[in-house]
Length: 169
Image (tube, rainbow, N blue to C red; front, top):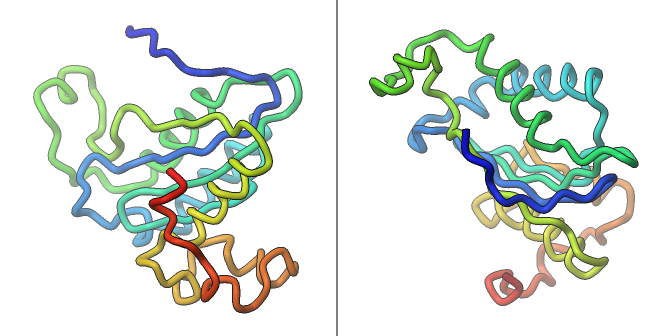
């Protein structure tokens, strides 16, 4: 098994992008309750905190924080994917390799991870998550954006005052 270079910080805060294998499928929003349950089960077994999240039809972005002395985010993503996959009907196309390994064809094997460096990096990634859904977060139901407005973290006109996020990444 390959040993990917990943930055691991016990108790760290990370930005993730996790994709479906077939990007034209909309399984994440079609089965949002199953995905929420996968998050819930994994959090019970291996605690973590979502700082911000957006679920799009074929991928998700999130910032999550691990407990002190714990740096195993890979194990958590493996568990989330496993819980979600087992409750989805097996109707997807699978490559010969996935058939040989008895793997489903729902998720890309890997994910993209970025260790949050400081408060500015944190704010940029949280803002990116909330800005991302088709550039209309007010209309997207599967985002923590609405909680940030309700809690007063973002002002009601936050979206109207945003810079171009491509300049920050």
